Image (cartoon, rainbow, N blue to C red):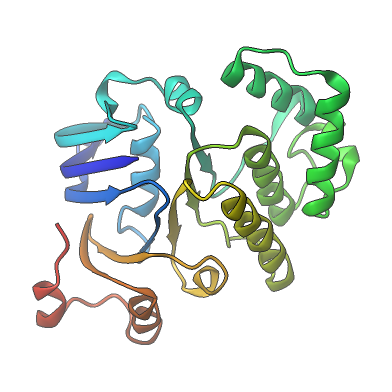
Length: 253
């Protein structure tokens, strides 16, 4: 699904390296979690995968769905089946959620979905997420809380059925009950589509109690310094992100 080999990434304006000799491989059906402190480059990673123009790949190779990422545009990446759940979903005035989602579905399938079928499916997904159906007819994320915005992202995900999902701080803005509900809906999706690959970006291990990763990576100063299982997440929760000699020996390439 995603292959990154010795990637160095800089910001376009400051020319400062954010990712440094970064390597990561995600296969079909795998769930990976990246944990790191503020400034480690976690959110930069998500932006690079989706070709944010503020970042430039200086070295290394990135392939997505077996294609060279450098040759792809953001809209191509989305059509191919990649989906980013944003850390801070923006308000988009003048575009209703339902119109946006119906158009996004058309861009993916190039077929106009039956309006009745579309409405029934989206209403069913709203019920799963405890979202009021009125939000479908208002501007995207307008007047919504942080938690409701995250649920709105999940609503789009359920409709578009992506093959590679990047969750950038999904737990940010969600209280405990909302996080449990969102993770249940997400896990149900993965059960229905087990070949889906997932990259979870997070500060804390809390979300990993509900969405269980196959691999946990510790990221410090732009690179992965250690890889393990869920036990590594618990270790990070106790000890933080300091790098010691034992960690260096387990450095992930």
